[in-house]
Image (tube, rainbow, N blue to C red; front, top):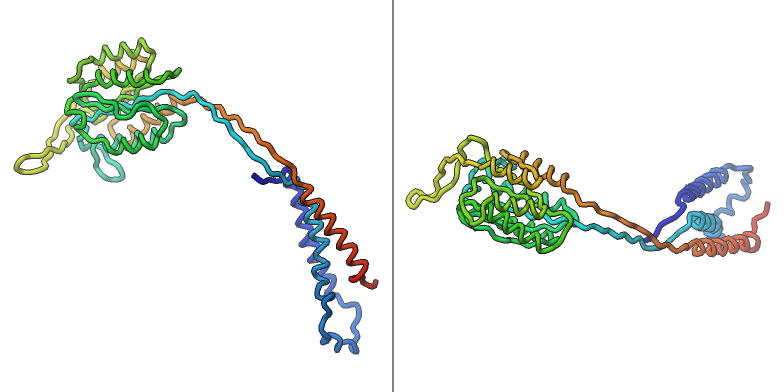
Length: 333
């Protein structure tokens, strides 16, 4: 990386165009006119006379090189060490059938709950730095979709491929927490959190939400719970009718807020309710701010001075100019 350590000296370069302008302006002033010598103008200039402007430029070149030396040109390498312990984050996403409810709006279009969640979670992942993030999906059962990793591009890619019903139509919140706890144990970290998002009530699975939360509490793992969907409103859910094709069934989905609040409270997390896209975005922004990773940055640089590469040529050009103007290009006063 090239730089000038004292760049303010480069301001002196402005003296060069000022000097050239002054010299030309002074040269236009005629001291006297000799009519009998007008014919001399038609005589072709000698090679030496053609080189005279170049010789005059030598002093400006020497000055520019000296200014460059004063500005201390340097070449070196800047290095930066980023050290971070990072935290473990498991994103647990509900893929049950109720996530197909069309009660979210994005970019002016109505989308289902899962599509709304995908974009917000992708932004959350992209905003993290140095953390290990894993993905667990659940419906009737819970599965590890991605183990803890810092490969955020892969996480975003997998998120985009999630489909409603891929883990069953029911909701196994306890199993989702249990699988998330197992994934967190894969890599040790001083801070571990689970972000569990659901739109229903736990009605499936082998592990109860209360038992799963108790295990998380013992292991000091914080759980943020998010309930998705409108309160006390029926939402349209697309269904395939064997005769009439795709139809919409209006259904009010009951979120077990008491259980989600208790899970968050027992593990020292927080509970949120998202009824629209803006609310969902604010929730993940809040979690992002609450769970920041401390990053230490150490930077240092090694530079080598190169002023001699400017100064020595400057002296050489200056000496050449002095010799030429006092010999071949000597001007009479």
